[in-house]
Amino acid sequence: MAVARPWRASRASGPFQATVSDAPALNQVFSDAFTERYRRDGMVGVRVPFLNSAIWRYAIEDAGAGALLWRDEREEIVAFNIIHCSDREGWMGPLAVRPDAQGIGLGKEIVRAGIDWLKRAPASVIGLETMPRTMDNIGFYSSLGFLPGRLTITVTVEAAHGERPPILYSRLAAHDKTDVLGECRALAQRVLAGHDFSREIALTDELELGETLLLREAGQLVGFALCHMVPLVEGRPREETRVLKLVLEHESLLPRLVLGIADLARRSGTRRAAFRAQTEYQNAFHQLIGQGGRVRWTDLRMSLAGYSEPRAPTGLVWSNWEI
Image (cartoon, rainbow, N blue to C red; front, side, top):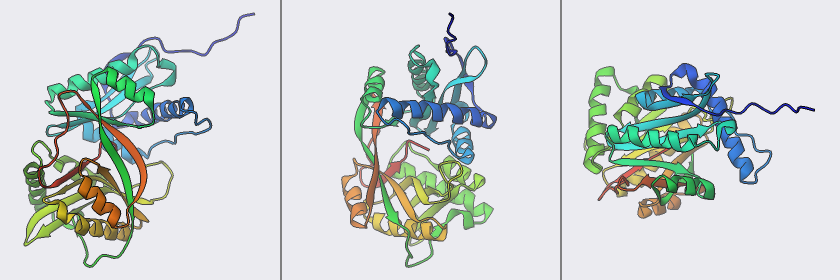
């Protein structure tokens, strides 16, 4: 008696550039792939939910030509790698291969395509983040030339009243926004050459996903934090103000900025602010914990050999390698 076997993808074509209209299919591949990843880690019954469609739009538009996907024999999306490059800082994520297409070398293909794309950009930093407990992932990326670095630790601070209203990018007049984007670009380059988050600031404002808090001293911009408030997961209420990019002229300014972000969280109707603290800045992490920060999650940063991320000599740059 013949037994029907589930259809399995045997080849893929690509890469093709993803568009916003591909978001629902990307969401399905993302959910299926990461649910399978958790199952292999022993967490049976965990179902990874769909991401908010607004987050997919941000990721795809931020990546531009770096939003890559692959299709199977049925022209359905079988894999993707969303590649970002902010000046010379390049990173990949999210990326996934549909479970029925795993084991045919497609994972290596999409990562190598990301590496090649970023080298052409050209990026001086090429990185990604993965779960530190997942040995398979670390081994997989290591086989492709990535080296483990330090952790990114998600630390949350409860929303609270601030001493003064924060200065917010969205409240500025259109002509002032152009000037401030230039200031943010100049500050990031001054603190850590090769970094520019002005595109992400403008896109966040355009899509109304969150806010950029500006920190000034004697009229000069000395820091900023790009935050998203829209729910990360589809159908969930707003709970967190997520800090994606943070730049400070000096680490000593961090407590003041944290207070401003906690106040922004309160004003935006979220319960807490979530910081993605890169632990090469140990003193800054210590300050954040000292302000009541609670550790929630850890990710391992991995960089391609020869393309590791530098540390700001005196200031602070926290750049999230996830959306």
